[in-house]
Length: 273
Image (cartoon, rainbow, N blue to C red; front, side):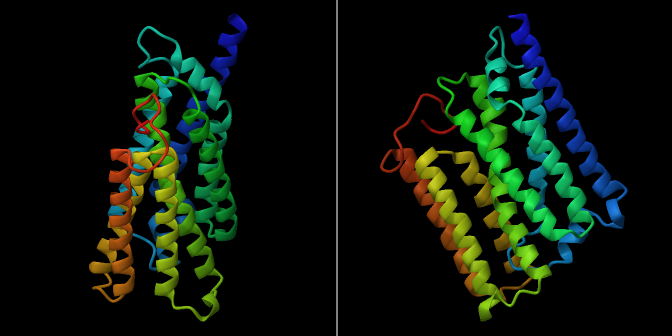
């Protein structure tokens, strides 16, 4: 038992330090800022039609708050009189700490305009979160505390990073001055939106994860607001695609809720099992 406790403590300490490191690096990115540029200014250097309004990025506050609650949970703060948190912490292992390192490295690469490197790091971050979400999904009979403070925060985080990865790819293509095989930028944006939407539908049908889909809907709203506001409707095809994609996600979500489509419900509530 003592060896097991020491084993869990290593993960708890590493996760806490990793989380605090991410918060510190992100704060430095906008307070110093790193390389004399804040994160938004770097994004503005690679303009494209997929980026939503700045308000959308406020979701990072939700993500970091959620991860902070996870850190408290993995120390047993919200677990009541049981030790479910220990099983969750052990299941995740070192992957969360690795994801924190990747998050911090991405900030540095992005601020130093190393966009190709930032994409590689983003892809690794995506994979690390995919591993965490899968490990949590396959845990049997999760407690309500686990659902709220582990599954919830990581579903939101993974949803946003899935969208951010597509945006990062777009930024790299802009930096490379890629001509897009002669296809108009608006059409490529439509393709990107369609990809994000199809991934969301797949996650809904296969995993019934409503928080993931909610994050994508939030992003689609941000893209819509930018195109209807800043761009003044100059790209109607993008607007129609956003509206159609949002409607598709909502309809599929309702069908999943009704049990008409998708995997059979399981025991926990976050994934509508």
